[in-house]
Length: 130
Image (cartoon, rainbow, N blue to C red; front, side):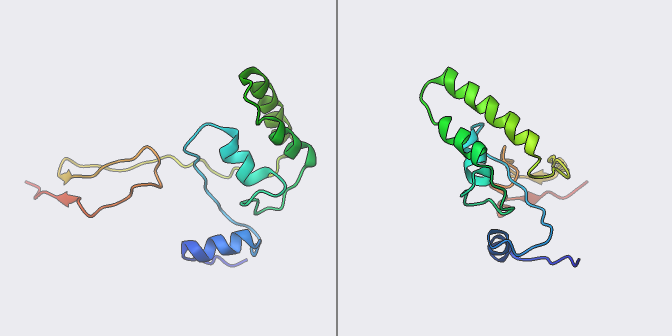
């Protein structure tokens, strides 16, 4: 296998066309809700289901969790999670933590809770170090 580095748009196109042997894909949902993960990645017709994984029972549970009854939804989501974990449809290779060195001479660096968002550096400046 060969490592190929691509610009984001070309990478996502290859991901969605399943034009890869192995890929590293990171995803950090901004909400704690099954709609943000299962619906995008694991339902049979999910837009970002790059692996092609499909389990009709899992998709049916996903559809059932779309109820307004909180207790019923929680019970269905727990079943959904158990079934998904039993499938091992993807492999977690690493968990990314944010490690960012920050010195007192760095000014105007604004951190965002979601590490892949708001990485603008145009207002950052370095003070002379004494």
